[in-house]
Image 1 (cartoon, one colour):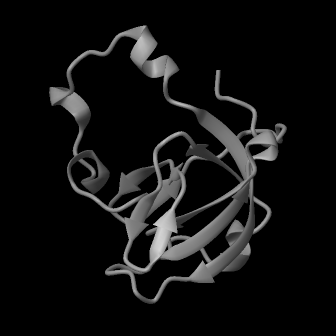
Image 2 (cartoon, helix red, strand yellow):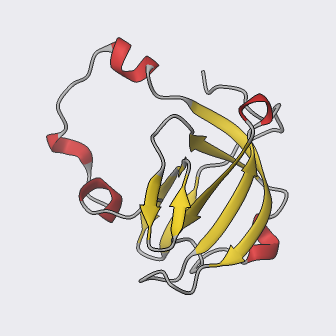
Length: 125
Protein backbone atom coordinates (compact mmCIF):
# COMPACT_ATOMS: atom_id res chain seq x y z
CA UNK A 1 0.00 0.00 0.00
CA UNK A 2 2.69 2.46 -0.93
CA UNK A 3 1.33 6.00 -1.31
CA UNK A 4 -0.44 7.11 -4.48
CA UNK A 5 -3.70 7.68 -6.27
CA UNK A 6 -5.65 6.06 -9.10
CA UNK A 7 -6.01 2.31 -8.70
CA UNK A 8 -4.69 2.61 -5.15
CA UNK A 9 -7.60 4.88 -4.34
CA UNK A 10 -10.10 2.17 -5.20
CA UNK A 11 -10.75 2.87 -8.87
CA UNK A 12 -12.03 -0.11 -10.79
CA UNK A 13 -9.53 -0.96 -13.51
CA UNK A 14 -11.98 -0.85 -16.41
CA UNK A 15 -9.74 1.56 -18.31
CA UNK A 16 -6.60 -0.57 -17.88
CA UNK A 17 -4.81 -1.51 -21.07
CA UNK A 18 -4.21 -5.22 -21.71
CA UNK A 19 -0.75 -6.51 -20.85
CA UNK A 20 1.30 -9.35 -22.27
CA UNK A 21 1.95 -12.48 -20.23
CA UNK A 22 5.63 -11.50 -20.21
CA UNK A 23 4.68 -8.26 -18.40
CA UNK A 24 2.89 -10.20 -15.65
CA UNK A 25 5.84 -12.59 -15.31
CA UNK A 26 8.02 -9.62 -14.30
CA UNK A 27 5.94 -9.03 -11.15
CA UNK A 28 7.36 -11.01 -8.23
CA UNK A 29 4.34 -11.67 -5.98
CA UNK A 30 5.53 -13.65 -2.95
CA UNK A 31 4.21 -14.85 0.39
CA UNK A 32 5.85 -13.61 3.56
CA UNK A 33 5.25 -13.62 7.30
CA UNK A 34 4.88 -10.37 9.24
CA UNK A 35 7.61 -10.27 11.91
CA UNK A 36 7.22 -6.78 13.36
CA UNK A 37 4.77 -3.88 13.22
CA UNK A 38 5.36 -0.32 14.42
CA UNK A 39 3.27 2.84 14.29
CA UNK A 40 4.02 5.31 11.49
CA UNK A 41 2.97 8.63 13.06
CA UNK A 42 4.49 10.69 10.22
CA UNK A 43 2.09 9.17 7.66
CA UNK A 44 -0.75 11.33 6.35
CA UNK A 45 -3.32 8.58 7.02
CA UNK A 46 -3.21 6.01 9.87
CA UNK A 47 -0.50 3.54 8.85
CA UNK A 48 1.82 0.83 10.12
CA UNK A 49 5.45 0.07 9.33
CA UNK A 50 5.82 -3.68 8.70
CA UNK A 51 8.84 -5.97 8.51
CA UNK A 52 8.12 -9.19 6.61
CA UNK A 53 10.17 -12.38 6.20
CA UNK A 54 10.24 -13.38 2.53
CA UNK A 55 12.43 -16.45 3.11
CA UNK A 56 15.29 -16.60 0.59
CA UNK A 57 14.51 -12.99 -0.47
CA UNK A 58 15.23 -11.72 3.05
CA UNK A 59 13.35 -9.49 5.46
CA UNK A 60 11.81 -6.46 3.74
CA UNK A 61 9.95 -3.47 5.15
CA UNK A 62 7.03 -1.39 3.96
CA UNK A 63 4.45 1.06 5.20
CA UNK A 64 0.76 0.35 4.79
CA UNK A 65 -2.38 2.38 5.42
CA UNK A 66 -4.18 -0.56 7.01
CA UNK A 67 -4.46 0.65 10.61
CA UNK A 68 -8.21 1.25 10.20
CA UNK A 69 -8.84 -2.51 9.90
CA UNK A 70 -5.84 -4.20 11.55
CA UNK A 71 -4.14 -3.90 14.92
CA UNK A 72 -0.42 -4.57 15.20
CA UNK A 73 -1.20 -7.74 17.16
CA UNK A 74 -3.46 -9.05 14.37
CA UNK A 75 -0.71 -8.59 11.79
CA UNK A 76 2.29 -10.18 13.53
CA UNK A 77 2.59 -13.81 12.44
CA UNK A 78 0.16 -13.43 9.54
CA UNK A 79 1.19 -14.44 6.04
CA UNK A 80 0.67 -11.75 3.43
CA UNK A 81 1.31 -11.33 -0.30
CA UNK A 82 3.75 -8.67 -1.47
CA UNK A 83 5.33 -7.43 -4.68
CA UNK A 84 9.01 -7.65 -3.80
CA UNK A 85 10.74 -6.50 -6.99
CA UNK A 86 9.71 -2.84 -7.09
CA UNK A 87 12.57 -0.41 -6.44
CA UNK A 88 12.71 1.09 -2.92
CA UNK A 89 10.38 4.06 -2.43
CA UNK A 90 10.87 6.91 0.03
CA UNK A 91 7.70 7.57 2.03
CA UNK A 92 8.41 10.48 4.35
CA UNK A 93 11.24 9.41 6.65
CA UNK A 94 10.76 5.72 5.80
CA UNK A 95 11.97 3.63 2.84
CA UNK A 96 9.48 1.04 1.57
CA UNK A 97 11.05 -2.09 0.05
CA UNK A 98 7.95 -3.93 -1.17
CA UNK A 99 4.27 -3.37 -1.97
CA UNK A 100 1.78 -5.03 0.37
CA UNK A 101 -1.17 -6.14 -1.76
CA UNK A 102 -4.78 -5.63 -0.78
CA UNK A 103 -8.24 -4.48 -1.80
CA UNK A 104 -9.75 -1.05 -1.15
CA UNK A 105 -13.17 -1.16 0.50
CA UNK A 106 -15.39 1.48 2.06
CA UNK A 107 -14.00 0.52 5.47
CA UNK A 108 -10.31 0.48 4.53
CA UNK A 109 -7.80 -1.78 2.83
CA UNK A 110 -8.24 -5.54 3.22
CA UNK A 111 -4.84 -7.20 2.85
CA UNK A 112 -4.19 -10.16 0.56
CA UNK A 113 -3.38 -13.28 2.56
CA UNK A 114 -2.88 -16.97 1.84
CA UNK A 115 -5.61 -19.55 2.47
CA UNK A 116 -3.10 -22.05 3.90
CA UNK A 117 0.44 -21.63 5.20
CA UNK A 118 3.07 -21.72 2.45
CA UNK A 119 6.87 -21.33 2.61
CA UNK A 120 8.00 -17.72 2.95
CA UNK A 121 9.26 -16.38 -0.36
CA UNK A 122 7.24 -18.76 -2.53
CA UNK A 123 6.04 -17.05 -5.70
CA UNK A 124 2.34 -16.75 -6.47
CA UNK A 125 1.34 -19.14 -9.25
